[in-house]
Length: 139
Image (cartoon, rainbow, N blue to C red; front, side):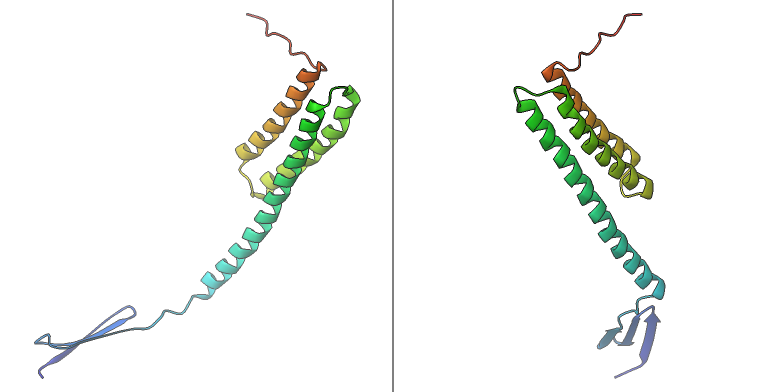
């Protein structure tokens, strides 16, 4: 058959003859490095932790927005009714701030979500006449 040459590079062993009549290639699956296994384990833990935190943020935000919608549609609403919603907003702010602090959310994302809640609250207050925006003074 002729002269045989053996090439080995990484995980591949290649045998071939000088005439290039036969070629055998075998590959062994590389063993996962221990650090990679640990990283995968840590990533999964973080994913579950972050998912729970984000879910809580969405739930709190949804509760606040629903309460604001109910209050906006209510014809004979009193100004004191906004206090219970402010408590819900405070809880939502707290959860958002914690998520930003531990790195689940980017700080700008957290700020945007808090701003969104504040704007909706102010819109309800304006709708019922409990808040009147002051015009900005020209300089």
